[in-house]
Length: 462
Image 1 (tube, rainbow, N blue to C red):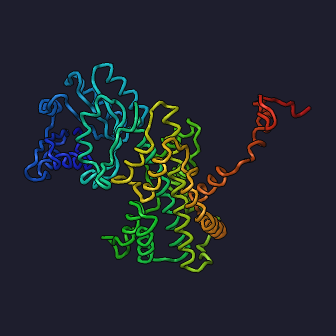
Image 2 (image 1 turned 45 degrees about the horizontal axis):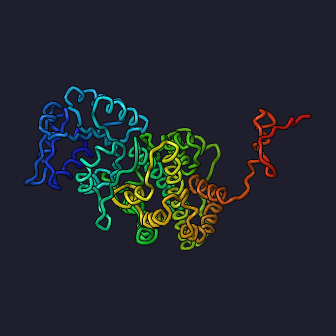
Image 3 (image 1 turned 180 degrees about the horizontal axis):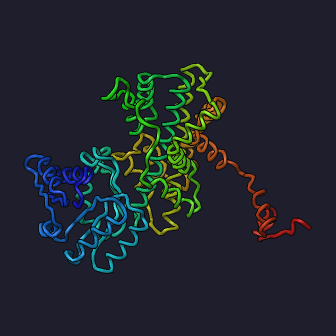
């Protein structure tokens, strides 16, 4: 393992716990010492501070994984490794690299006789230690050499490892990118439900904990709802308040959500909930301007005029509805990318891998798994009858929540994007015929007709 931050160290210790002798490299001697001192007794764990020492200790073909920051650090490690490698050695990038960088590195290493794989890993530091979701892709020759190791350390669902070879080229990192985009979307949706229940309905942190606990015990069971439940109980060690109330409302981002939005636009796949989640994080950074705007527009906090239990149920249904839409958008993007980017991504395997260990794991993924099991070529989950039935049962409460939020001035951009996508996707006829007429009017962009085939242009101002 190259890079012994929390993720790298925990994943390596996980491997050692499953009977694999491991060696970790880091320039920081303290990190290698921490690695060795953290090892479970009777496991083989060695820390080194030079790449040459690391390579010398490995059996051939050597298997080396990097967990370093994306971008230039990955290329720097590869360049440092090159003089030390032999034909057939396997180098794995386990970080959050952009898939285009992975494609470039696969080609570069292949030309030199080395194997290179991009592997997405999700689950955070705890998942890395006890069982993450692992998304390898590319190099089919290399995968059998690392498959037993990855299957051993991955999370298990009903005894099945949450790891599978997910396609050609940079498929592993592409699937992880979309995973993170869905993660952005669901986190945004949960934050909007929190706002409606806390500011809109007046629930305190204990009541919020109880509400999200009830949701997690039911059809909304998921890792993100589970940790949301727990967050409301955490006390601040500097004040007598709950910690969540002391955290500034500015959200950070590492770029994977933005990459998902950018690539979806290149592919021509609509993912508006993910797009809006990225936008709202960016808007949160404008704290000073938002504070000033609040004084200008004087928007008071307004109670939602709906009985408490009724509104809580409506919000639960809205979150369930919008969560399905978020998954549907991300998976539809993977369906198109699989073909257009020649990745051959097995959709059923993607959903199987996400069922355990990862940040977006959810009981809903069992429903999606069955959908792809029935139809591996399913282009959009919204076309699956069982999922359509779930959405039909929630759509009215979805509308009710948005109506109340709009009327009272609460921002619910993610929920609105989910409903708008749903309404547009199920519309046999959209008003885009007018847009095409406008384009032809000012730019001679032509149009198609509904009554005969062909491409047409009209001189509109004659």
